Length: 279
Ligand code: PAF
Image (cartoon, rainbow, N blue to C red; front, top):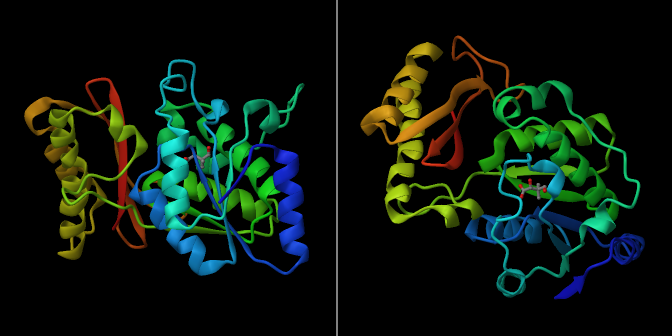
């Protein structure tokens, strides 16, 4: 596996691959890899000749009081995992490369960034869209693979690629869960064993909502309330939001009459967790 730290070298390598007719698949990450990331690699391998993974903890998507400094990082562990799973090229830029001196260009995806996490993490999706746009221009992928765990992020990126006529297919893959039902996340490294147990309520709330929907319940308020009640049991978890939205536009729904998504954000002690599932 090749490691490329420079944006310029990455871009010229990508253009060379393209010129020789190779298809490039891209898996952008912030590192501290887990099985969820590696499944994205598996899918990328199925769809292209060359798989590029980036590892870059992007400062512009973190708020001033968020965990940018302490976000878990372990490049050597990540590189070994990526190589073992068949990544061909690891792009590991630094901030001076991604954001050249004097940088002042940002990408904003308006409506999709506003609700849900956008309310509580102002500027987050602007940072995500900006870095992903830059990464797409550097890596020149034909296809890019993201997890549905960050469902709003996936929708923001798909919209950005469409609106800006980016010649890249943005693919979303279902969330990978531990055997317990806990959605895999690099940030699970912050959780104690007791907090992990508490966090299982997110997956359970999603299953409950899915059962209710399958059983014919169409009233969003009823499903959301039952989900919230389950999350609130025991009182150790604080709900930031629990919303059922249109799966494409992320607009609020009153009735389940189209593909929908239950999207959750909670705090367990000071640790924020998100999860979601289709309804
Ligand atoms: O999902 C992530 O890991 C990040 O938000 C991404 C897409 C790599 C952009 O920094």
